[in-house]
Amino acid sequence: MPVIDMFRLGDKKLELGIEKFELGIQKLELGIEKLELGIQKLELVIEKLVLGIQKLELGIEKLELGIEKLELGIEKIVLDIEKLELGIQKRSLVSKN
Image (tube, rainbow, N blue to C red):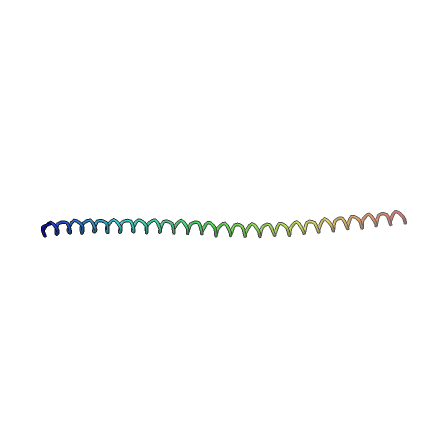
C-alpha cells in the first residue's frame, strides 16, 4: 500500500474518531440534561413530600384539639349530670320535710 493511501486511510480514521468523540460529547450533554431534569423532578417530589408532612402535622394538631374539646364536653356533661342528681336529691329532701 502506497504511503499516500496510508495517510488517506489515517485521515479517514482520524475523522471517524473525531466524529465518534463529538457524538460521545453530545450523548454526555444529553445525559447531563436528563440528570438535571431528574434532579428537578426529585426536588419537586421532595417539596411535595415536605408539604404533605406539614399538612399531616397540621391534621394531627387539629385532631388533638378536637379530642381535647371532646374531653371537655364529656366533663361538662358529667358535671351537668352531677348537678341534676344533686337537684333531684334536694327535691326529694324538700318533699320529705
